[in-house]
Length: 84
Image (cartoon, rainbow, N blue to C red; front, side):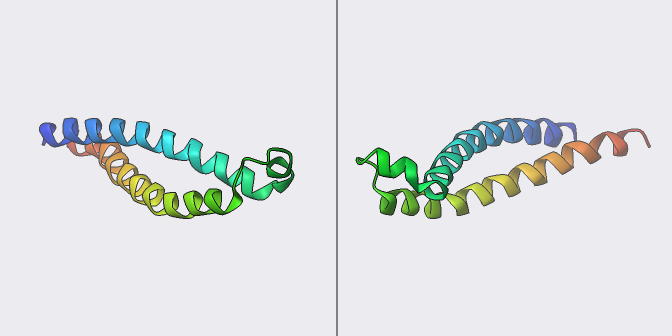
């Protein structure tokens, strides 16, 4: 059971790094989509491409976040099972 906890912790750490990168990309593309005056000033920004990136990153964000949720819950519950 301890090996499963250690594996869960390693996976969780990896997923934290991945979600940090995806989260920054999602936040950046979402900001550009919400505040279109930024893209009007910077003419090289293609809103169609930004929307495409934002829409296609969101399922990956959700999957990675779900993985973090599962591993995080396991790490939270594990110490309670060891005390009994």
